[in-house]
Image (cartoon, rainbow over all chains, first blue to last red; front, side, top):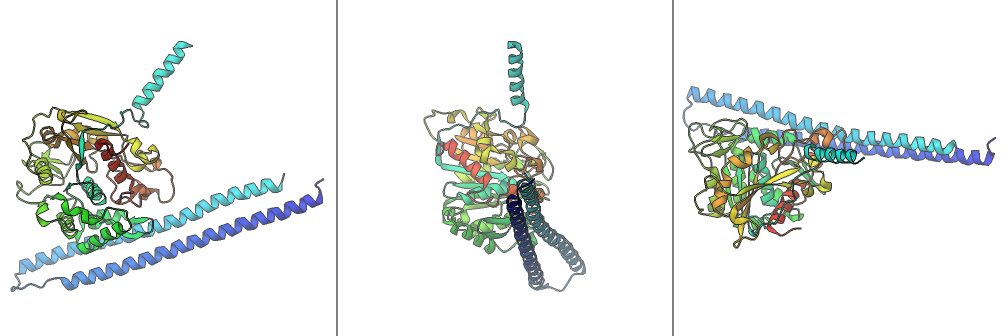
Length: 130
Length: 368
């Protein structure tokens, strides 16, 4: 037979523990959301820089001063195309890495909180059920 | 009982000898080296690290040589309160193979000024007395010559007199040098871009580099009469966690006879940093005995420090999480894009920069 006052105290204590766990869970979700937003902001900024850089380079491309030689023109266009392909691939890699790093940070926050919450729940149960 | 104890002792000794964990090498010693005569050089990732070490500790380094690499901060995306965010994709992209995406030299000069303002690196003004050698091969398919050219421009922008910056990039045989430390008579064909990244171009890079930094030198010894010392690198890593921070347990030092402890005259110290896939883990003693530096060191009273990097795996990192893959170093490169979670990799607080500088201070008798 459990003494009623102890049962009530234990019940309130358990409830308090659960509320504490839930508050910390919500804080972790808030941090994760903040990281996600920061990641989106950084990605957007990077994309803007990429577009600006592409525009700047295309504007600063020197025009030929002498009458064009067809071979030189084709050769130049092929080199420009190769450069553009490499630049696009590199920009894609940069954006992918930034997105992956941001996702990893979010995953780390949520996973470590989930592990802690499980430990805290176990401790709260141990405390509530002697 | 005695036999069993004896067997256990033998097994422990064998484990210490063959096991990769503990270093069997002796601690790095002190040598009669003038602290005002310290210089550094490196190839590829070693060039980027040599450049980082030079710019971070410009008050204590008189010159630097960068071969096929070295543009300060080119992998950095942004600076925050606790360090920098660098990206591997910036390192392998703009810094190495897509130089059209590099920023103007003013951007890197401003980054240097910002890091100096935070006290993370020495004031760039200290660079003014430096002598700098840069080399890029015209057949280099791994690090674009434009990156090295921009590295030279950055030094000039930071105040190194034009006459003190030597950029060597042409007049080698055939198509020019591939991605390599170039020698007079050892290694792959001159235009190769393959292991061991040491190429025979009939050009003595060690001579040119060392004479750029130290001025005219005595002719080299053949063969060198000094000796190679292996030393324990783990004491220079935080918590002795060398592997987790991309450092091999053991480094190497070349000591000319004239620079043994107790020598009457002071010697100089030159730090040489290998590139990716060139550490002693991969090339054994090939890099630190075949690149031609020891021959010049022997006759010119130069102690040569060869720190060694380590190929760090996920399992070796201090903690494993969703970010672990970004923190590995599969090819045993020096840290110039912030692996192992090092947000200060290009400053005095950087783990590897700090470790190498501590080695320098030990050799020169400035540290403990």
